Image 1 (cartoon, helix red, strand yellow):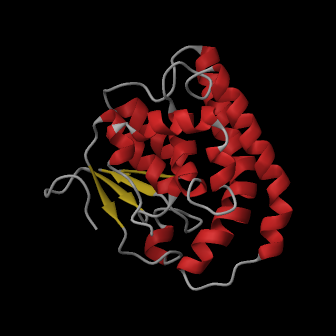
Image 2 (image 1 turned 90 degrees about the horizontal axis):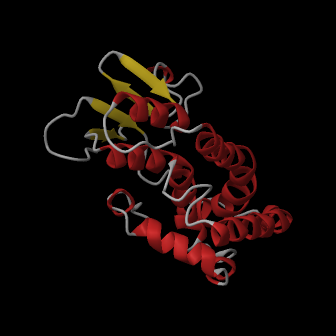
Length: 216
């Protein structure tokens, strides 16, 4: 699978278009105006792919002789290597707020909303697997807390910790695409105007529109 133009780009992202982590890396490239190829034709966990990502996960990136794995590493490399709008604010507080949301997302939100709800409800049926309803039920109190925190934050500022979109927003919007169509969280999101307005602003961005997953 090849994205961007028909000529080979210097930067290659390895991963499938359904992954929200891969999507965040792609959004980062679009925000910076960096052409890339999206390579999905490989086997996870294969020796070839483990040479790109030692734990056999996605995404991974190659840019010439440079290899980087994991979304945060890739986005940081793209942000600091290429011209274009900064993905992380230059000031200390802005950078700290961006990274606190990225850290909370990777450590807490992915565990409860991503793996326990979205993966169980959407991904498992998509791949012919059986949903664990008990896992979803157990996760819902934490998911409700996540949505409450998101709504409170976005009622106070247009983006997560900043007046402009940052890398934190790009991590979160990629997952919220699925949360907004997940039966367990769809109504929860719709009932929080601050989240809905933020999603509308994010979905208007060219980088977000260009990377919509082919899911459905």
